[in-house]
Length: 147
Image (cartoon, rainbow, N blue to C red; front, side, top):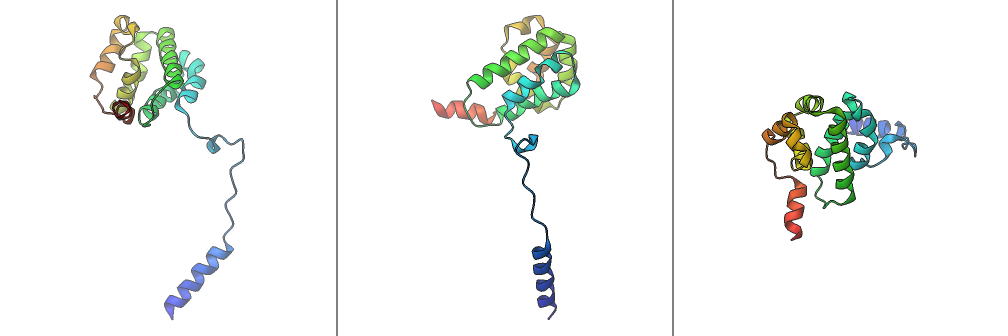
């Protein structure tokens, strides 16, 4: 008898519950997160040293290397952003911001930046990137499997 009562209560609760409202078409959470777009949109603020913008750029690297897709223009965009932000902020500020991130985030940024010619003139950032954990990212596996 108690099972029937519980079943009736659950059924009534489900029937009376309001339907979820769909997200508005222009809601920011209604769109797929594209790392290169987020990185590009944060660039100007990141060049001024805004912590949230820098973090967005760094997290975009982490999201992108975790995607098992080969890159193209998206990598070019992110490369341009990181190079431009580093050039504008300078080695010390860029390295200080990057040092606040988790090691795996630094590793993801290193995936993009470690081979930059600019690293010769940015010893603090270069050391952070060199000391970041070496991770076999899904994007690395995608490139290996593409051969």
